[in-house]
Length: 126
Image 1 (spheres, rainbow, N blue to C red):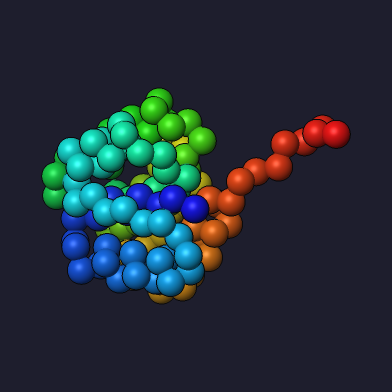
Image 2: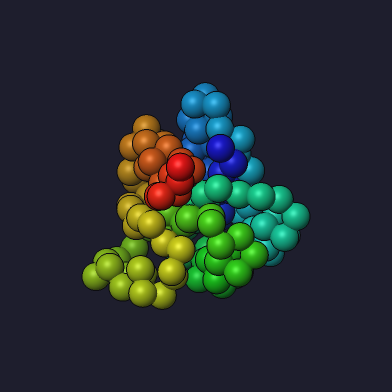
């Protein structure tokens, strides 16, 4: 599974990366919008873990670009703020599949990546 982490706090991103790599996932890091867009334009991604509040750029712009460039990729948004705590993020980003706090334990985040990043079965296939 290919994972892109878009997180301005490099230390936090590396904690997530190491945990996911131990589970056999291929993980790339981007520190902001520019790096994320560059990655998405040249590499396939199954799932994106993205901080809602980026130091460089807009997480919603990255999610929008991802939905255009890689429509099958899903986004797990993380945050340490109360923005979108009402669940409205799912209206603003059609590829959002989860919304969790940045302090979520890495093993819980990895379980979500495994769940949401798994290939979907096509119904009616015979």
